[in-house]
Length: 162
Length: 83
Image (tube, rainbow over all chains, first blue to last red; front, side):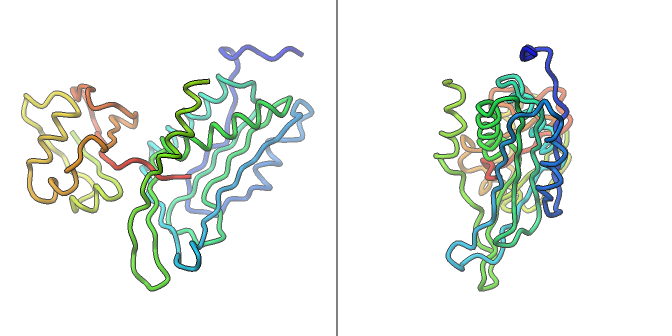
């Protein structure tokens, strides 16, 4: 079957913004196994303890806009690559080291589209979805807001040049 | 219109949201940021570098030249650090 053209292709992505833990197995099961999917690429971003300094990360978000912006990023990816399905899940609230913060998954007939689209989703989840990280330290103090990194901006920006 | 503040912008201003009626000469996002900056010490502290501040009108990212006429909710926040 030829790949449907991008303009007419719509996917029904799984988009969740929640404080709850992410059940990656349930999401990947929902996206795969249809017989049309030949490739599934997933990415999970975890909270680090920063050498034992960090007790938790606090994720603030803009309710309403966060979901809409993530949906927009997913639709941008679906216009660029022939993906068959996608999931983009982001947590908010207090997240302990070792816990997942973000999960993205993309499916496609062949692996190239799923790899590229998942990478694209993560680059824009970091730079254009309205979330902000703040550090809570093991000594009980609330540390600073995490500063935006130029390397993350550059990673997102490279897609505009492709 | 409703203004919503997030992360360190919210913290420095000291409130999460408010209703405002800017004067008629405030027509763009850039005008709004400048007007807000002049509303007192906390606003001045939050908006000392307006060029790095990000703005969304009714949940859509906009640049600082965007007109604010007709906006229901304008959100003002630092660069995002999700993911």
